[in-house]
Image (tube, rainbow, N blue to C red; front, side, top):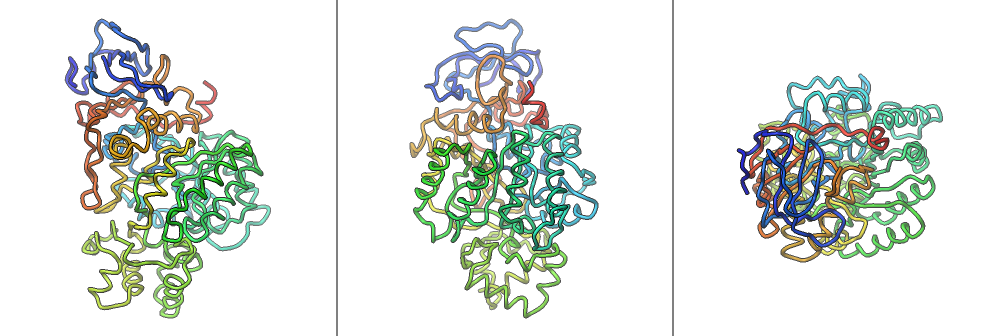
Length: 545
């Protein structure tokens, strides 16, 4: 696997990847060929290429594929604080899509940024050394470029952050003037280079938007050629109705639709992915431009506070914490959690044995990590809701969780869909984050391709590179051909595997010795090189190439 130069060394503008199985992203059978890189581009693909002075990498016995694109990433702060970003680049990820689930740090105002920092602590932590001075999409993308990153970044405008900036955190309909203000912010974000709009319709305050409000924002996105990536109102009891609402918005506005972490969760939906496929296929037949992404695991991941009913979270984190000090509020919330099923828990009564603590903000609470709420409550001799409330308040809502509510048949059905792409939905913070943060892409290739045969190797590369590139409109990525950007991953089809587990999640994948971003190695002989060739991609610039 080693070439003629030391790993990561810069020996010139050209690199020759010799004799690998080239999986070009078209879905065609792989072929043994050489791939010549010059600068940040692929210069030539063919047999027996020569390139005097080029670094030579022996890729015989290995596969050469376009770099993987993570269509659902939560690296919004990681790309600004961790230039190595080993969790993602070691998987072969060369581009990530951020701003997910309707909540991120821009757009923001001086008033909403402190709220966002607190509300998102369970997703991203609150790292030292960041001044959080960004207020617009342009500000954030410029900060990514100034800092330098290992992989590329694409950004979605988070609808909940937009609503917070204009309407606040209240549960009410936006006024016409406020709707105009939100539309203007979305238009500005699209002009700044965002690729579309995300929403988090089980999270405050995005969940307070009605269908008409979402459609009004999607119409703006459609005008700018972007797409809508909703975390819809339910993945549980109301899942099909929630998906249907998103499809209707896309149909009515002409906005492209990307259903993110698209699956059917909880016991009420076991084995029902075929119903979702029927809805998706019907929409496509009607002309809706629709794609999906999924992660290849059964557990979900979010924050412990996300399970709360929306009414209890109105006003932001400080108001929520104050509210939970009231025994009457606790009793009401407990009834909704365990009997009714909150809107935050997808309309399904919570099973505390499925809620596992994966990370805490306060190190003094670290004993909770790796344990379920049911187990913590049993040890304390209190009802699970009391243990839940006490942990929420003590950790100031910064607790992250795994939610074991998936179904294997549903996972396999969705990943087979011809409009499917890969997305990790990986939260990188916490003592025991979900292993999908480190293992999503090698798990597709190792477990679901090589071991289970759910996808062919050629199809998997389309799902992980070419299709997401097409959804993003990245005309110069996602394929191996002359003139394309040299975002590439070299892996061993016989050994590639995820090694991250629920007990030990921060484990680098096996069988991925080389990863290139813009022609420069970010992984060489399995080790991080320190190169930071990634950049903030901007849709307005890319679509005008």
